[in-house]
Image 1: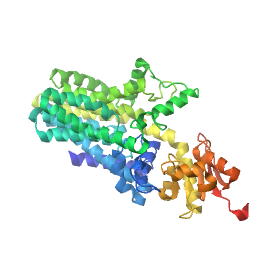
Image 2 (image 1 turned 90 degrees about the horizontal axis):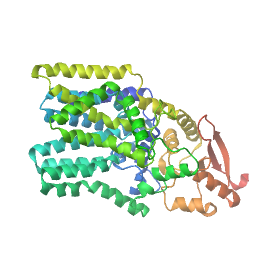
Image 3 (image 1 turned 60 degrees about the vertical axis):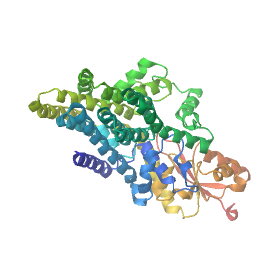
Image 4 (image 1 turned 135 degrees about the horizontal axis):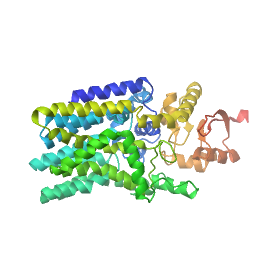
Length: 494
């Protein structure tokens, strides 16, 4: 099964790469560059992991991201994602086979997961969904194994999977208390052991935030947190996100996204299968795999998390991939319908389910996650490439570039310029000194600015008493902010 999953994932990854889709998602570009800057930075080290995004995906990308060709192509981020895809499918296969005592059911669960077009696209990019799916499926299999064996090896694997989940995405934190209660319910003496081990991941991230930012909850309420960004937008008069403190709307939007990424046939079969699984006393797998979708609805309601679908206001694509959290649940639940078939009929039922659901996905059109990434990235990709081309032709190693880390980091990748050439907000205390007192501490030859960002503000401040910068290139792309590239003006040209 692992070989088949690897072949499916590798084919999809090559297809996406050959068409230039690997870095369509802005988040994919960001994940890749965060991994690179951990070592390729003016101030390399743990602070470069940042605070909002959890570190495991970046840690997995890091060794490959230090290879220039793999970084520039984006493949450094694809490899860990594709491996996560294979592991997720393999653990789903193993969990369904053990749960239903049926190899055909295991194959059904794995292939319904693996043949989903949206999952195939995301595992072909430097995104974190496939890595999280692997951790979730591993936790599922480990807890089922523990239920049957109550072995310390199963307990250790469950704890390791829980830590991997909680260091990949925040819904992993939501899983922890439920998994701990399940272990406690099976064997009280092991509940505390599991809880202590599984808590190491979240505690490590809290410690990271406390150490580098003097606020253990910096990822939640700090300057760059989603909550803080949303609060600033609301204060500026931006319309609140759909579902904000409205359970009905949150569920409406999330279900609409589920229909787009999973498809109505799989949702219907999965719902029926979930009922069958629960009647067969397989309630724990259904509960565990239902937790990530519940987390997202809760997050839309209470944490200002946006999710847009084209069929509902404001008729855009944004964060549709969050609905892919329902895929493991639907795949495992649908497999229960194979298990209840007679022994000789199981293979036929499995084949019909896989072929019909996979076929329906193909005829549904382009994957919505791909469409979202394509539509929302058109302008960013254009100005990134134009900026990169200009710097590649004019920048000399060692000159130095002042910029704000984020989308602008993609310009360095496009230009083939190492991130250590840039001075950005993660480089303390040099960044603070250069932006607060540019007349004393700003020595960079170049600067890339977006109107209103910290770099633009620094250049305005520097214009009063020096150093002085001259606009060399202005890049205007429809639907995007103006990108301005400046070069330091030398005394003899002033």
